[in-house]
Length: 67
Length: 383
Image (cartoon, rainbow over all chains, first blue to last red; front, side, top):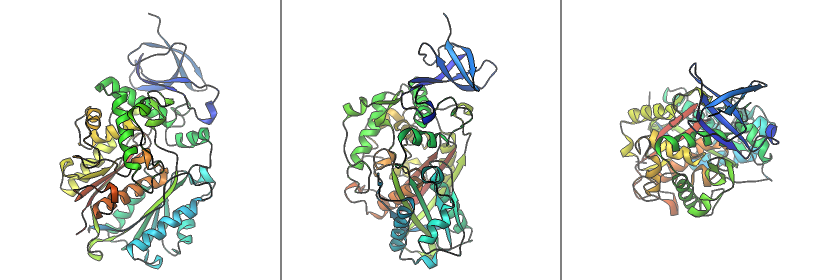
């Protein structure tokens, strides 16, 4: 899966004040379409390959793919 | 369908007003509009109100009759419209449609938001309700995050730079400094704009519009009743998906493109004919994209266009002479009608220090969420 776009959130909504800063991504899904999720570990950029890491309460978390 | 005109405008100052409540702001704008139109409250045949989140910000529902009653308007339809940051643009579109269809003659359209009584994380949470709370919202996307992702993609596809976005902020602050009703009446330098505190990469505080309190109102009527009034030449509202990840290309707002095309067609003009425009710069990147979607610049060239100075006061295409959402302020529900007031002021030649030289035709573009609602209005010169 490739990163379509990303941002690092420094000013979070009330529910996520303890998570900031965190990275959000929209990734292109291999089966088509896109999904919004978060990044675990290393910062990623547009075009980077990411792997699905886990689901937390319906939110997909991704991790930079190993080269 | 008969032609419709804006016969009166009224605005409060935009800013942080701890001693003012939502109703008093809306009533001040409404009274000013009545006075400006030389119309009595008893003549108003319908009241349309744009408000995004009064119930969340101040705990008050049933806002349209609540405000209409305080203005002395009773016994007529009084309805609230909610379309995120395009709430009052949407109210305006529907009011114009009703007058055009001969349902009413004299109608008031108001817009109001009272935002500054809540702490920033709560404001971010309430605003995030304009997005898909079940998907992007649950993942932690605020509005700056959604527009940060839009900016990143625009930079990636077209080579747009931080400096180009900062140029929007510098220009709009320069205009806002000259607007007595603006929230932030101070100029900023390019260096300041480039070194702001990060909010959601690549956006800093200087890329984000302001959290403001404020209200605006207009009175509309059939053109035949109002010789000399500013005419609505074209108007359109369109929609798109709410969630950003459902859009095929996030570097353009398809709803804005479609609304723009419809409004231009209705007015029988094109982008080159627009003398002055108020565009929805909720974030600096949004103004850049709007100039592309409305045909002021080619796709991908909105960044170099603003950096060239073309959209500064008294250059070829003045954009956001009010200071825009960036400096004038962005009381969400008041923004759409506020833009109409600002364009009408320019067309009447009443913009004072900010008056543009050529002011025959103006355009206002109001955007809801990350592009799910768009309203484009083209207004013509007073005759």
